[in-house]
Image (tube, rainbow, N blue to C red; front, top):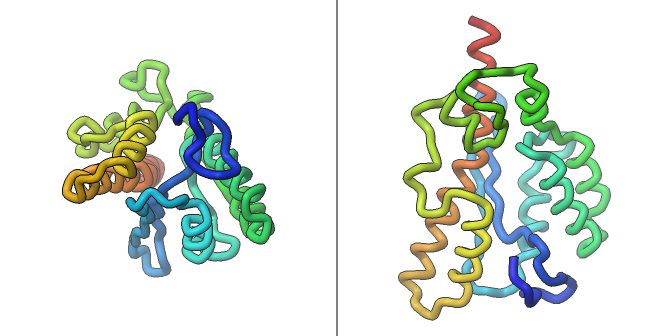
Length: 189
């Protein structure tokens, strides 16, 4: 978030989606991954929404930790690109959020210490996974790293930042998959 809008049609301090990571399970339970993150500094929104709309199948169940945040970003895309409104509405209607299960304490673990953020739930339910070793480990850092990436003249540094952003975003979506697998194991064992 920056005080001066980076792209036309945005406002100061607006959280603008510039990347995504998408893990999905195809028939046969094969986990696949797609991601998007341009590094050239051009407005990524149109390219992002076009690619995302192609990669999310119609009527797919989409999981998002903190649905209100993700829904807010999708609604912004509806304003910017109304031609995708119908598909975006379908995605929002089919979006599910595991976080409320933890917030309401329907799923409880003493090590969560009352926190239900993805960064806290992940190491409790999937101890082999963590954000600790990542150069970018939260959304604020990601926003700052993106600005640094698109402003740097050094191609090597730009690619290093890009890889850090990709790793962070990929872990965010893979974490949801692994948390759900852990919960499934608890329920069915």
